[in-house]
Image (cartoon, rainbow, N blue to C red; front, side):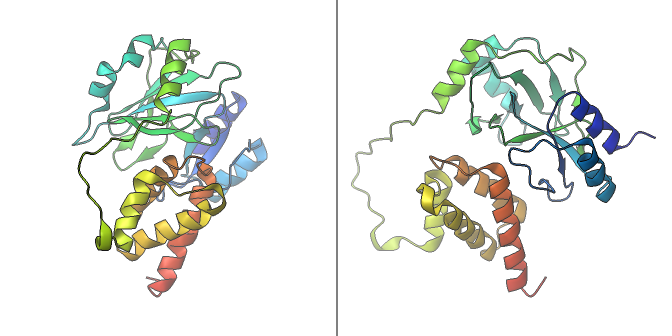
Length: 265
């Protein structure tokens, strides 16, 4: 019987940097920054956790991640986005929620970064230490499935690269005409909201700021999955953002601390 480990080994032999993902927490079960795991390491990971999902680290490729939810339709956003006209025939997959992953190779010498919600319902997973779940990974909604159009991953055209690089450039802040000032009404909760869009601050204090941000959310009873997503968004809006595995480690640590604070509940 073919198991998840067999798929993981197959992908590794094809040259992909494979990462084991815990099905419950949806996070990597090992440190993976700048790492490419060997066959023996992959066998050990899946021996310890046979049903772990499989992800690829986005090393020399990136993914246009289209999501569909009650409030946002990534397919509609893609139709209205200039970028869509330049997408070549390439490797794609359907996600359990009915979304789509579009895989494109990075041109040689080109570096791209993660861009959460570049358009409503669309994320770009591109940093070399981002990752994307691949078939036959699954969750309560179903499984990730490769589309049958092609098995070949095309290189991203220059037009797509230009659009993505432009989308990451800092935008001019809106110039409000009112003289609004929060004054004495600022609170710790308000500062948490502000960090979601203003980021975690300067390079020297990002880790402490992230830990404080996560702790503040969990202490206020925010759902753990929602807190994780908010942490990723805050990191995204940090000018010099932290690596994904560092965010994961900090998040796991703060969850454990919060559980200890609650008496191990």
